[in-house]
Length: 383
Ligand SMILES: [Fe+2]
Ligand SMILES: [Fe+2]
Image (tube, rainbow, N blue to C red; front, side):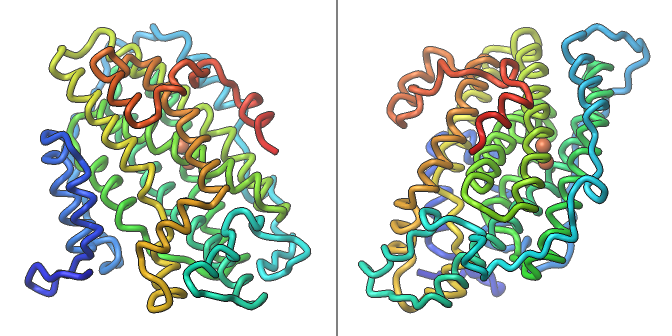
């Protein structure tokens, strides 16, 4: 149901439920300004550009001490593994997302037969169109996310206190710029359709851009969003048969493996020495709430509104999306990567264990963290 906040600002009651879902009051308060801008004012949808006020501190280092060898090794690897989106991908590949011979996503991604339960029947052409729209929607969100990652990585490069981290951060800025470039190019030249930024994604990015605490920015981008992205990229990779998209995702996944590795190295070091008990608890709560928000918040409502509104309710659509086998694999994949990283950086304290158990996420805690997984390991995990 839609409501009206005044001044032409409309909201959907699902937006209210997002704020209500954040149980921890401190976390809800810190996210509230971004939630107002994203969910109620819909700044990401109503404007061509959005100015976000950054307030973090720049850490200018005059010691030039190189004292983080593991991070330096990661930097060397990043320099050695740079690729060129123009040269290394075959852009002459003909892509036809409506061609059933080379499905752009597998049938288990959107099990459209399941719509019959809600009285919606699609012919072959409509089904192909729905798959096409969903892929455009996903890749558009990747593109928006990569723009956020580009700015976040630039900001944390300014803020980290290790010289080796600044070296490494510079390579990540390059990586994210290239990711933005290749997703944009694929959408523009191959799919020729893109979607606006999802409101929930806008809220998370706005929150990270404007939070003055560099380690929250870092945690949000390098651990949470990167974990979400890795889950989404590998799920899409494993379902599409389109060769250019598969190759593109493989390249991006290799880079993202290093980004998360960098994230866990920096935060493990920082959280073990640089924060108070109260600050730790705040970060534990923040990470937990964001993990839950990421679980059920990306349900292609823009595609629903375009194709199915009026034929089925939003709640029915949510149920349909949540039941998709590929979406279940995506959540599994995301938490399999994310939770061991939270454990490794010290945010799964005994106090938090019950929360994770209740959310069904504790089972992932003992898995391999990003410092134990190389680029090759992540590629080997793809199908
Ligand atoms: Fe990226
Ligand atoms: Fe990244």
